[in-house]
Image 1 (cartoon, each protein chain N blue to C red):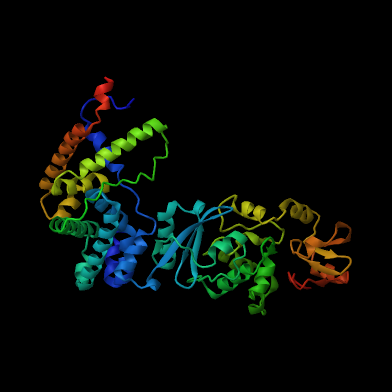
Image 2 (image 1 turned 45 degrees about the vertical axis):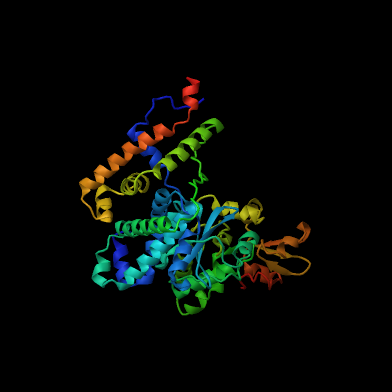
Length: 283
Length: 192
């Protein structure tokens, strides 16, 4: 019946192994209870929870008023790894909690995190503007880098410089801002593409961006097909309005009324105006 | 991380203390759980330990905070808190707390149900044997083999020579083996 037939006394190494196995994890909110009991002010530390998303577990750290950071489980080595990284980025300690930040679960479930309070910490003003622009991209839609540059006001500030230099520098800032995304998934970097329509998943591990776009219902094969034909904008022959192909209005255009355009000036020459919802660049 | 912790305690006490709790509270709780044999006691005493630690840190000079070796220091406080708790309970005995062992976390290499019952039984016997050890060897064995402190750290926490700690651990292990043998279920003899 019993597997241990080795003799009356367990050997010392076996006993030591059994003792080491007795180290049991503390309840999830034990640390939080300790801090509350000691009377540490709530704004001196961050709490964090793990929420389930379509791309695996997401650790989300938050202070009393705003979310301060988020990382996918696939990006770190366990909760300890997340705590260390959060500490080194924000200089704040993250303590495991059981209740999430108000509105967080809804934001993750619906993919609509635009109104969630996010404290980006110590990022430059330009990077902050980029990330704020990224946050306005709706669920299920994609925007090119040039759109982000305009929304973030990167092209206005450098008006006097050469156009080529400006574009290159703006792209640089955007690339760095996306890679340094402090709240992965809550700031939806997976909805940003390059000018040729390929996604720039700088902040995500491989495969994550694809999974997120798939659950948001973005049909990448159709977009790739459009891009191959050189259609980066889509107009409607009935309304004479052109959109980004993933815009909710563009998705409603019936195939026989769809008019593909390479760029805004081509659309304008054809007598089309820009959509006021997805606001594509104008010529 | 541990090298920076005392420095942070000196620079900003509240910030350093939250980090202290983050890094060391699991070990403190494990220690209290295994010496007291009760999860509820471990939770209460763990909170008490850190409350005392915080009060003590507030009274320390900056230099003293910088020279602190947090883990051993916390274990000293935890052992004292537990000893006080035991003494109070002896003076004002309440109902005997049953030995708890929530085996919530099974090992990942999941064994079959029969083996699982066997390992759970072994665990329960080991846990209750631990609580039958005398105070000093019990603390020494738990610190060394469950929490995983070095002999040097235990000696520092217990304020005694390293040799004494080694002797306590070794004697504790011996008594554990005797206790486990005495507790071995009679089914084994019946089956043979």
